[in-house]
Length: 352
Image 1 (cartoon, rainbow, N blue to C red):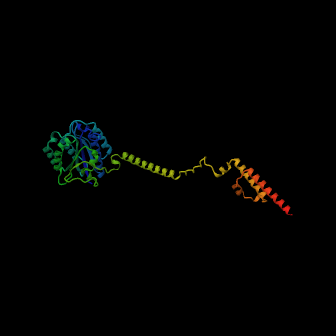
Image 2 (cartoon, helix red, strand yellow):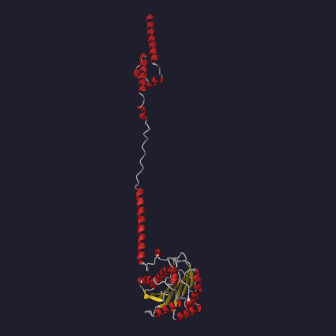
Image 3 (cartoon, rainbow, N blue to C red):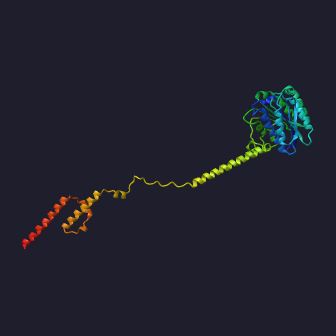
């Protein structure tokens, strides 16, 4: 990874109050500055990064050669209170060049990263003047990355001048890049993350076009939860803990459902309907008159058997049940049979 001392120039002009980027242009720019700061510091522990403004009363250096994330966040917060005026790009580039010249470690390469989200004015809008400044920066071995953002009308006016400026900064090595980013659903920081400005520090970055020039429309965030842990470690840790707690809750819920389904009681067998009657109940519910009728039939059958000289105990009750006769008929029949027997005995006496 390259050893570099980087100076980032941020746009704090009145145009930064526009809301075409989330939440405002300045807010989107601040997130992008944090992303670039993290990539530079993580790529090499000896790298340093400084921040300065380009508008207001004039270009102002907020911090030089820092490695502390907290220091960077503080200066960005202070810069938001200084939004005013118009950006003076040529003066800001000259001040940034002077700040890099006084870097402590002379072995660090020099780089300027320019954010511009407002129309170029004054000498900055003069392409010849910008090309002259680019030639001076190239001779001093200073690489420059330019990030142009804002509405389409403003970028259409700025991009040709800024693109020509970057091409003249590039020396023997394509160490400078120009990126133009239109408003859209993707965050400004995400688009920069896939641009050559950051991909040189992270080899796994998205490849871009040759010549140090690209127009990015989207990007992929390679960090877990979309948060760079080096920029906001507390937020990254909180999101990770929240994810682990949710996964544990889901596992517990699945285990509870499995236990409840395996221990569910069997359904009881439905009881018989109270209106259903058994054969025994039917038998015991027969009328008393029918029982008495059966007894009388048995007595008559017994009397007939006795008149015939048969033992009443041997009479088949089934036959008696089949020949159903009235009481009077049975008595008359018994008398007739008795008279026949008497007549038979009288004839026997006469023969004697």
